[in-house]
Amino acid sequence: MADAEGAGNAATGRAPSFPVPTMPAPPVSVVGLGQLGGSLAAALVAAGRPVSGWDTDPTACDAASARGVTITRELSGVVVLAVPLHAMTTALDGLRVDPGATVTDLGSVKGPVLEALTPALGSRFVGGHPMCGTERSGHEAVDPALFAGARWALCVQPDTELPRWLRVAEIALAVGAEVVPVTAAEHDDAVAAISHVPHLLAAALASAAAEAGPLALALGAGSFRDGTRVIGSDPAFVTAMVEGNAGPTEAALDRVRAQLARPRPELVAAGHAVVSRQDARRPVRIPLERAALLALGRAGGAVTRRLAAFVEGWVPETAR
Image: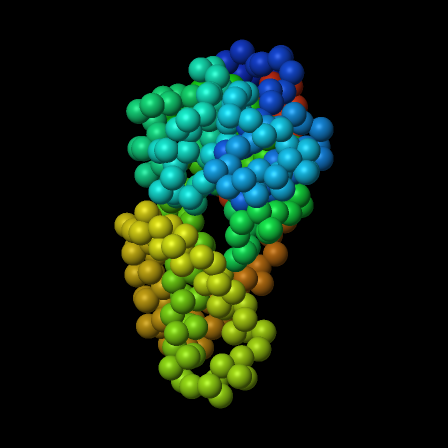
């Protein structure tokens, strides 16, 4: 696969396509201190980064303050929007944001968020989405270890300023995540298949089991709990997510319907082969260039470390 080889063979000493920042890591300001935002703020405090934050809920502010977060309306450095999708465009209202600050988000859909925020923020905005979280919500669900080992999708658009992209990537790496470079469209297609459709399937499975009667629900065990866990999430959150990514989600549902039409033994064998596959990882080093970063993400790989003018990471061995 050419893209994967491009990612793996890019450590040839080529100079990066932009000046590498040498300034100290900037402070981080988190807007929205619920599960994701509060967990990020707490994890960054534990990593020794200066962190400020704000939330419209005073109890969330109090909880974050107790974990070492400075509560303020003055935001600078890298500003993280950890708010519901419907609140993205108003999240900064009433707050004072340094005009040089980089802004990112943790939203589960990227195309609509980019469309909504780019007119005001331009290339200062870098879309992101950490692939973690639970069916719980609010500041009571904060967990500083939430991001450890998680994939963190980070958008590389044609107008993305790579120094800003790197600053956001460094935040993800600081809390133990692995960064997956993507375009917004690639992200939305991918998460429709592995996140948005599973929420709908969980809802369908739970509803169908309820129709089977109380006995069926009483006998539900591990497979039923695993299959329905995510639909325990806030229904408003799930609805906004799937409707905000309606086109890709419908296309992914069509693929599921096609799979269900296959002969049962064939379907079971094919699914088992996917989830039981064990791919080796091949380490790679690539320059901080747009094409190389996207090649890494498209190969199924991730960034795990910054090294001077390069980043290090891995790709699946089967991508060769």
